[in-house]
Every structure is written in C-alpha cells, then in structure tokens.
Image 1 (cartoon, rainbow, N blue to C red):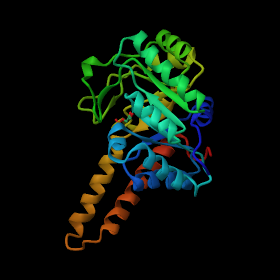
Image 2 (cartoon, helix red, strand yellow):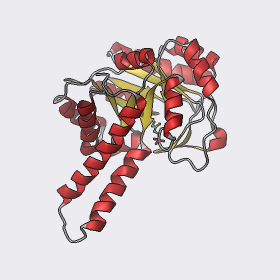
Image 3 (cartoon, rainbow, N blue to C red):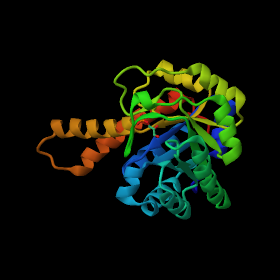
Image 4 (cartoon, rainbow, N blue to C red):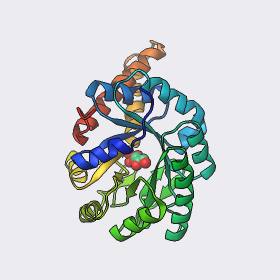
Length: 284
Ligand code: 13P
C-alpha cells in the first residue's frame, strides 16, 4: 500500500501500550529488510532516514525507494525524516512525499525551539505531513549531531505540555536519559518522568537511543509510555558485522549478492526480534 502517516499507528500504540519500531535505513536493502519483516510479522512500522543518509542519496530517491518497497505490502509503512535540523531539507522531504518529519531544534533555548518547530509544523500540516519535535536534549552521536552525556537535558512534563500546545507537534521525543550510539556506561534513565510525561499528555512519546538497551529496560520504557522506539546504530552494526562474517568465511567467492543476502537475513532477524519485544508484532 502507499506510505502512510505514522499518527494513527502511534496513537494506537499509545492506547495499546506497545511501541512501533522506527528503524533508520541506510540504503534500499535496509528499507527492504525493515518492510519485509514488518509484513511477515504483521507489524506497523516506521522507516526513517537520518541527515547522513539524506546527504548521500537525497530525499527524492529515498522517498521513491520507500514508496516502491511499501507498495508491495499490506501492512502500514510510514516514512519519517529523523532529526531534521535544516529547514530547507525538511521542506524538501515534505515536497518529495515524506508523510512525517522531525524538526530537531532542541539545541536552541526553549522559545527559539518553539518558534522554529511551529514554523515547520505549519508548513507540514498544510501538506498533511506529521511532525515530531524534541524538547530537552538527547545525548550521544547521531550523524553530525554530537551531544556529550553531561550536556543531556531531561524533558519535564510541564515543558512537554507547553511545547506541544505552542507548536502543534504530533508526537514528541522525550529526553529521559537514553542516548544515541553505543552506551559506554549504563544510561541514567528517569522512568518516573516518562510515566509523568505520559500521564500529563495525550500525544505519543518517542524513545530515542534504542541501541544497546537491555530487553527488560526496553520493556519498561514501552510499558511506561514510549510509543515510538528509534533504532539506528544497531542496524549499522548488524549490517557491517554480517558482511564481515560472510566475507571472512568465503574469502575467495566474490559474489556480492550473496554477501548482501546474508546481511539482509541477519537484519531481518534482528529487526523481527525488536518487533516482538516492542509488542508491535501482530498489530497490523
Ligand atoms: P541509536 O543509534 O542509539 O539506536 O538511536 C537511534 C535514534 O534515536 C535515532 O533518532
């Protein structure tokens, strides 16, 4: 089916206390792995693209790839721009058919974040496109966004409510101690704040920094109110490790399609595990 807006699937996830996986794709094959696994598990799913991948392929090509792959499925597939920091790129994604975008102006003071986010929301909503915003600061490395752990700022329920009221965002990244990239030390999670955020809001909350969180922690984050669960670094690790594994075992083969097929299979296994863990399996 055509690409869909993630709003409906995220509202259903919030209501049903499960989370939709939002997987960062890096090329055509990773989009295939995400979408094909979603189809096999009857899971609603979000494919998202980061600024680095957009610099490499451009939003027009990425939207075309996602549309092409989703067209063969019967489960809802949303395409989302992850961590948009450049208004021009966000507007281009909207024009090229992304049904959802994130504006990340979280490095700015609150009022400036509101101003920049509200401007994007206005343009996006006029085109029927959903918007994710961020208030508070998620630490770690996400392409060219680098935030040290001691610069993380946790989201407060008051800020979240005011931010949504003034901007009109459809869902919100909750900074509650998770971080992008690999964890060097165990994250200091504030589950109580996540629970308070959920209780004081009526819109879906997004958990960033999914890679490396133990399964019991993921379950707690979902049970406490995370409705969209972002996973990026794990995709890259699984992809690279799988190619390495295959090449090491078949050093003289030189059949690139076999290398890629091995990575595709490993990616699907990993992604499927997350769909089961997040509870989105069987929900489409
Ligand atoms: P990880 O790279 O830690 O999985 O984080 C993904 C993310 O939050 C993308 O926005």
